[in-house]
Length: 219
Image (tube, rainbow, N blue to C red):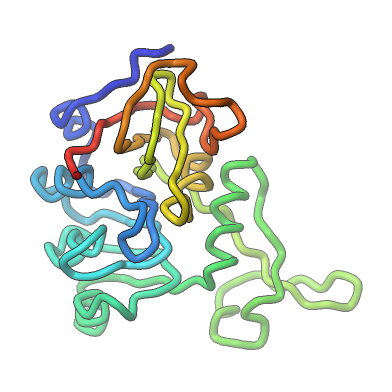
């Protein structure tokens, strides 16, 4: 149960072309940068990335887009990464823009085993194209389907050897919710401690959700 530590080769062996990967972070804050480095080195292609934003061309998961390893991105914002917009216009990457709150709820639905979420966001706009619209008590809603990934990569500040994770301030962002919605979850942690050193009330991602622990190589 507690043999969760993984090295660079172990993580690299998890990667393959055409994977769907969730990557935590907000404009690079809370992003597992070393794991992104390893994806770049492995050179896997045609990835589907689920993320809040595509960060910057030289930081965070945006580097994968700059390296043209991503074929499809599901995200709420691309404006800070000119490479994303460029490839979208060229047709070399498919971009699904999802309102941020809707994106989080779709991920949460997958983690909770729900069939979807009803939201009024996007009703009467281009967002509703191709989606089922339902009327509940006189109000129109869009049915947004769950988002799940084969692999979720999250960035933790402090993790014990069982896989209980603590996040420092805003590095938390989308990491805890993504840890609920993937077949395999890898946390890149800044610091690793023994089991029992983290107070239970501080844990934000509990150990049963974490498959592997990677100790960060970043300062």
